[in-house]
Image: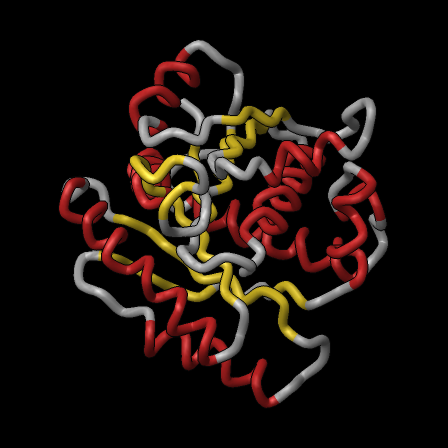
Length: 238
């Protein structure tokens, strides 16, 4: 069965799609068979892919913005050759155009399906506090999955390049804020900086490892990918 990674944060604009797409790209170029599930009703990942007439992405994208991911995804994976799945979750709140449904339901379903949760967060106090809105959902998941610990990692995203005081303090502040009963929340050592390649790659329909393979952005994504694989290998052979 494939291993599922959910990329989630209730705050919009934190870089969920950037992280999900580039992680999937790096995993695909490493040789894994990867599926990216675009669970955001806005379809940002699909729009990224459609910016290129013929997809050169080393992974498959499938839109599924519904709150039944945890039920339907295992059925699909049981009959597929995918080894890794990355779910790009929506921001929190009501789904635009249909107030009957909330994006929180989609995210909750994605978290229930996940073996590993990545939470991209920008290193500012306001972004940290906004991101803690995900903690109640993580507590819900921990309650329903008492036999399987919830493993969540913060990913510092959009940090200014270089050693800034804000960047140096980012991990310690995150460790203090993101503590909740029943959920093992840690901070990834790898960080993603605000780099031009991350901003330019979507318009080409490519991820940074193909758009600028020798760039600092690609180096950061590869470092994060290696760290993610190391985390997964602690529980299962990938």
